[in-house]
Length: 609
Image 1 (tube, one colour):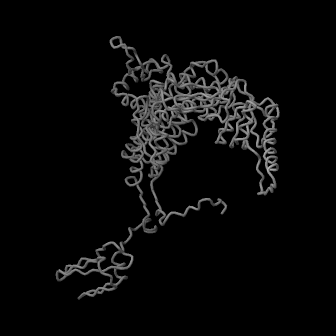
Image 2 (tube, helix red, strand yellow; image 1 turned 45 degrees about the vertical axis):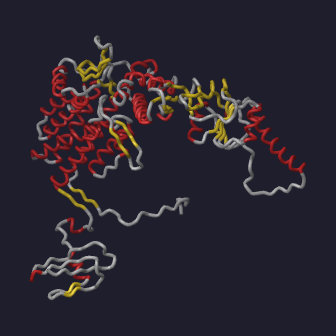
Image 3 (spheres, one colour; image 1 turned 30 degrees about the vertical axis):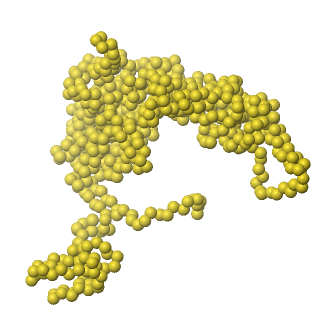
């Protein structure tokens, strides 16, 4: 046996060129010798012949027209079924997080930040999904988050289960276009049926303040899916904050940014409070720590001696001139501070630094000084106290001065905070307490969902029965509708109706209850009561005197378990459209990814350059 070795410059890997068994000879290429040619009894190998030997012929068809490294798949087996499989895998990730008893996921993102949550929007935001079909479903969920702010997991579940049911129809022989036509017919019928399931509670946009208990129950449903057990306490807290911000005119547009959250480590969630106004995790600059009936001036500039724009030189010839020069600076800053005090200002909020000399005169005239490093916080404080942000240090006019009931420094746990408390404020702050950062982050996400539900409530006040009652009623009504359709679309409509069964089924499975029994009870009970749903409650045990969690079917109207019509409407709409989009794809064409080194970052350069 004869071994022949060959390498070329810049080729480091061993390449097996050919294997010739004539006369029991084998030819190999390796990187141990650097030469240009190999001479044997039969062959002369050059660089050109080696490249020809390594070239693999391309498959015929569309793929032959594309660059090497591109991907092309088509047909039911390679494209459609694989797309459906990817969406099913994505669904399996978030299914166990659905409902009040959903499990948490531990996600570590690309910058190694840890998330422990069951919020589907946060999970999908942090994971990097590459598959294009799964991305379509994620985009639908993202649109639900932007439109409503809640119901993202519902979109993923409903859309993937629709695709799972569509797969069985495809294997039966139906075409994707027939299935999408049936799904669109079922969607149209669903949007017609949803408003007919409304629970009449005499709730309108104008009387939200008069129906605080009902509003609280609506928000408790959103919080209960994230923090079951704390939903009643936090629901009441968020309701008070939202109604404080809306004021007497409930019809005006509600801004989600007006509900601020201040997370302070320590204590428990039941120690959380609501403050009408702003709470900032800072300390004051001056000696004054509490002011009642405050009159406030807000400046975006530093509170200090003014500095000229150009560089200047001062020639001092004696000590008297030096003292006079320093005296002029002191007189200048004192004149400005005294003008503020004469205008009745007793609190100054600055977006820049507060100089030592300015701080001396602020303490002299009993004026509190607060420094904020964020320009966004500066704007929010100005909005809270109804003041105008001034770009230059001067005495403000009467209309530019803000007012606040009280401003004081408080210590919560081991954290110092400045509280701007104002009864007529257009901003409210929730002070959340918790033992770990992960609990506080999860609580913040639950509160954010509840606030978005309140915003949705100001748009449309129609309430639907929760706990899967709406889904079971839709499933039975759509099944009846499917039987009246003469065309082949009836099979798709029937599968669409069956998809709604998965919602109460997953709620039961995540709670550890037999889903088949729950579904059977719900179907039987819905002949008499359309508001029958799956309830998760707390009952006091007579033996242990503790609160036991109960799982049963019951009237959700009596239990005041409500879902928002607008949330359900958009979730079903986005999920159906995403599923139809995935089904309508029969080819996937992926270009070759861009290679080469990453573009050099020019730090400090302007964008125009």
